[in-house]
View 1: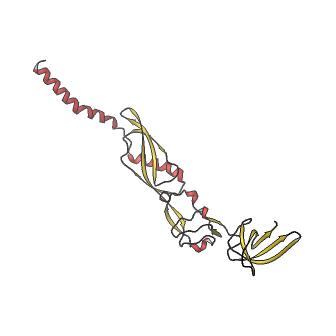
View 2 (view 1 turned 45 degrees about the horizontal axis):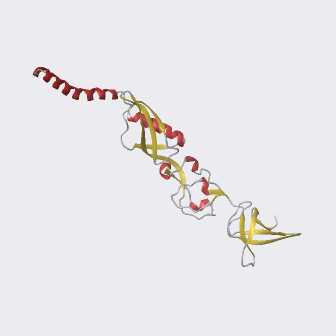
View 3 (view 1 turned 90 degrees about the vertical axis):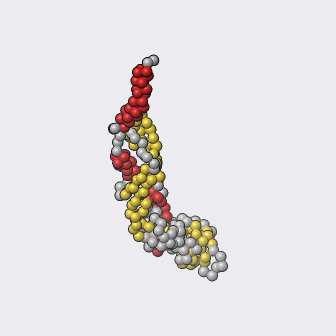
Length: 233
């Protein structure tokens, strides 16, 4: 090989080293803007959470450079971290990537203004409206209580917690420490007296009652508003 030919080969190799990356990068011209991808992710998350949500999304890491990508949210429900599958083309090849996003999903909701014990009226917890991040609290919109009128607590609650439907029930027919009518039934016998309910109860619930003058309680069944039955039902 002559010196001239050797020089041309060396120059060709050098030119290829510079030109090939440029040509390889040309396939990324059709890349979709990150803003468009984010809008599609938000639209799908809105479908999971319903109307009235204010979403804040932030990708964890760098979004893949794809052309004509399709978006599919993999996470079920609203969470502080959601997984999203992106499928598209990169340099003529089909590529599938899973990207994680930080999510905040704000909505106006009832929260407890004061801590309160189970078996007390919800009104004693002074519920108020606040902006709540459902994703951070790992809640779904359907978990939230909307109608609060006349409801009672079935568990202890803390100030600042969202008011959830599962924490509430209708007003008990029998209330704790309330004087109730106690009907005692036996074979050919029915006696009515008074006693104090030791805990609240709905229709059919078992509650202990302390009869007037008694030193220990009896098991009774709630039969109506302010009335319990003891003995044969």
